[in-house]
Length: 191
Ligand code: UP5
Ligand code: MG
Image (cartoon, protein in one colour):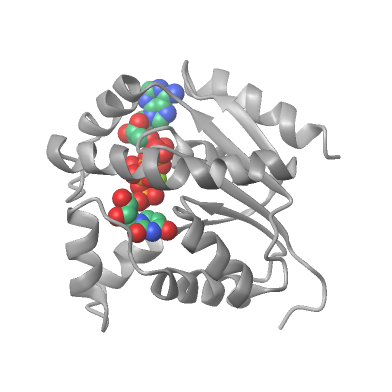
């Protein structure tokens, strides 16, 4: 267990808003450890773990995996890392996720920064459908479900952090470089 509280950044935004892309850039420049909740869940599917079939079914439908499952994976990844600076990408998805995380993780539960990549739905859909990496959820029907989940379940989480004064809303349109300049402004202000 860690003695010091880690520095936690949650990275939120709809499907295809650029969370993963910008996290890679943040890792290069600011030395965070990147934990994508979606990647951790997809790894469970490929490892044929106990919950693999359930996770696959949930992701294929664009629904949200039960909090306990996702939080266990995130907690394990935090505890096994040497770093004390984390980018948690694509989590929390729901108010229930957020509250469960705060209850279970405790040390470092409250994020220092929450980034929100704000992007019009038509831009996000275009990006996701042209990705071509074989993700089971990158098809028009599942993308519609993912957008629905984002609007109804994730926006309340974003509002919560806005009210707490830790939310940084970033224009998610433009080139990767243009967006990263906006991200830099947030992290450079923290130095
Ligand atoms: N791209 C990126 N930036 C671009 C730019 N500026 N201009 C043009 N193209 C750009 O980007 C998407 C695509 O766009 C890429 O091809 C990229 O090159 C290009 P990416 O950076 O991958 O966007 P990201 O926001 O990461 O999109 P992603 O599809 O990963 O977002 P989701 O939130 O949908 O996916 P995630 O992996 O987080 O979750 C998947 C599923 O897992 C969820 O739907 C859910 O079923 C489940 N899940 C849970 O149940 N609980 C969790 O806590 C997390 C996930
Ligand atoms: Mg991603």
